[in-house]
Length: 111
Image (cartoon, rainbow, N blue to C red; front, side, top):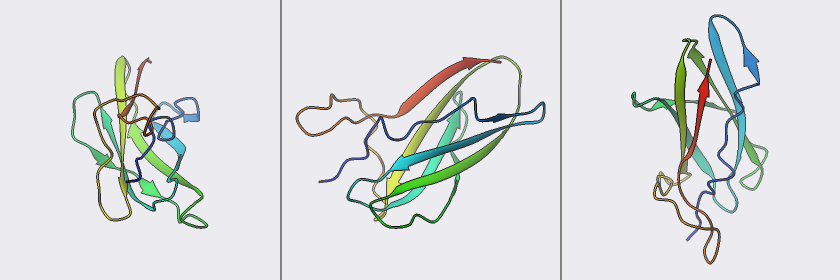
């Protein structure tokens, strides 16, 4: 069963920042399974769907984007992905070996 890799669903918080919005532009490798959706959560708020760019094939990186209304302070961002068939990324963390890493990518930043 394909797994969505923890390391491949990351976010770049340094990409594009303004006083009004923080624009996430990232990529995610779907390995041997298509990717149907990416969601981002800020702090403990609701999951918000990111916009996906159409990939060149099922085996290429999927570029996604989310614009977050900028807010000063400390914030935690989490990312989760869905496979092409709608299967949600495995949230519980596990090591790379023997079957591939799992878990949600999370990053905390102070603005």
